[in-house]
Amino acid sequence: MAMVAVMDDRVAPAEHSIRADLGVVRHDWTRTEIRALLALSFPELIFRAQSVHRLHFDPSEVQISTLLSIKTGGCPEDCAYCPQSVRYDTGVKADKLMSVDAVVAEATAAKSAGAGRFCMGAAWREPKDRDLDKVCEMVAGVKALGLETCATLGMLTPVQARRLQASGLDYYNHNLDTSPEHYGAIITTRTYQDRLDTLHHVRAAGIHVCCGGIVGMGESVEDRVGMIATLASLAPHPESVPINMLVKVAGTPLDNSETIDPLDFVRTIAVARICMPRSVVRLSAGREDMREETQALCFLAGANSIFYGPKLLTTPNPDRDRDRALMDKLGLTPMV
Ligand code: SF4
Image 1 (tube, rainbow, N blue to C red):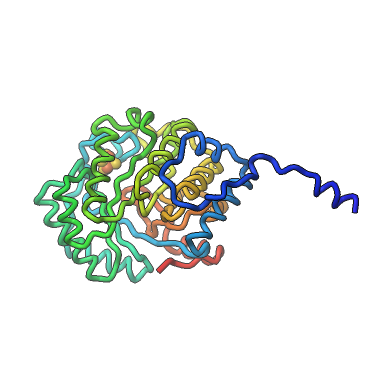
Image 2 (cartoon, rainbow, N blue to C red):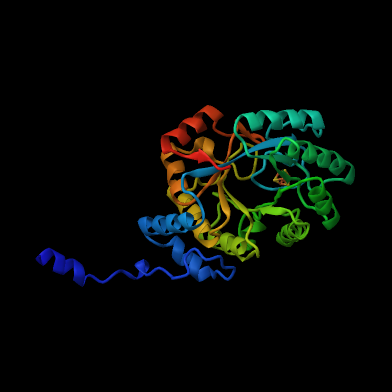
């Protein structure tokens, strides 16, 4: 009895006072609120993220996407993490844009392997109109297979976005990469505003937005706060939010960056889940080097999408058998 009395007298720590609107879609997240979430005790943060996740999603379902590089290397941009920039000696060979038939064949194989969405990535600053003609054909061909379509082609004009939408594009990926403050240390060949403008054109064309960032690029905790605050201020929120862990590639300026603590990565996922409750949060690049336990924690923190397939553009990804085994072990099933 004495024990019960002691328990009843306990005062809940402040961090246990959860806002009544947890799980409600908001676009007015302040940096102070996001900073406070990141600083919560790990169990409290995961509990909140999982609570939000369950309000909007089946926690045992994971959306599966496949990513194909339809035009590799030779990009004039200087994104410091990217092995496809011509400015860095990374050994990535520049290829021409793939043929429409070859892309549709890859999409057919991805569908039989269980993918629900097929993403086509091209290493361009922006597509030329003649290249876009071909990409539109690819989009129409992939869509005809019954797959959701996604593309990442660099900056778009409003007209290009509308053309892609008309050809059947469901999603366009264009990441903000990091906070506005850290951005200049990562990319100098286009501005943060350029990125926001492309996102605006994509949204205005009626295409779903896939937009997230990369952690482990030498950013501060405050930069992670700023990145999530910017993503969560987009109205509507991006339907898909990839959170990438930097894959360090020899020859790129970020090759020697300090590796992010896996638990800090999990925290970033959890806060993204809380701030963008209805978005699919994708556990994206960096899984190849991630332990199963870390991936499991990411799913617990609200990640509910992965890329499936042995390569993410030019960097390695776990092979399908390894992913299937992990999903079986965790009792996860593909989202349909
Ligand atoms: S991330 Fe994209 S835009 Fe930047 S260098 Fe790589 S391919 Fe080019």
